[in-house]
Length: 254
Image (cartoon, rainbow, N blue to C red; front, side, top):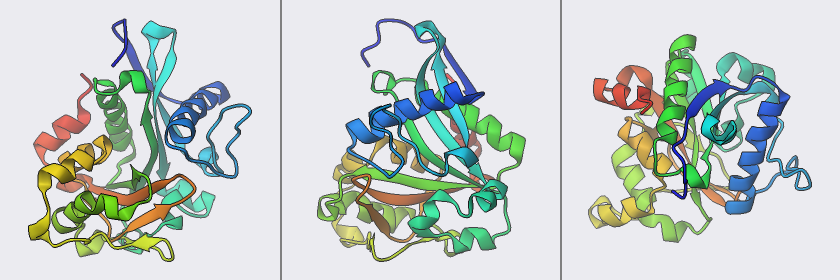
């Protein structure tokens, strides 16, 4: 972290268009400039990362009031009923969500999670999770899911972490979504006995590691997203199966 002040965090849903634009500006800094992503609705002149799904999502925003209300973190959340209005969940372009839809449970898709580079490694993400926990409780969410990404599309370079996810964190069959062809790739790239867990965890993005600590599991197969220059996995979290310890971590805002 490079902060020279003590943050004063505040979490709330986007209240107006200005809040949404600020969230999209942060997303541009991270997903476009930092990670090399793109998309048909990205506005490079205005420096906004956006897509057709934004109007259907609720946008959870982390503000630092000690920095004049600066937007420093973002989550977006799509409830099942809103997905019907949107025509699909965002991640259905990458994964067959049939098992989740067939479960009859209350679904929430998470996406575009990001924290400003100056605030990483500190409590910012936990404040976002505190807001997310309140939202989940308010709406009676049973299952949270969404794609999380490894930077880059060289699957061979990701063999260790992808294989670890497949062998140790694969979702139960009832919740096992599957990556869609033609951009689906296998994750069991090496045998379980060949995995160097330390090396795998070094390559594992912080957000994925955090979801695993909460009891998250992954779908079958990864998806190569050339538009965003990422290799994606679909994480699924059953709120009823979360341990009390995991719930304390998930609800903490320290």
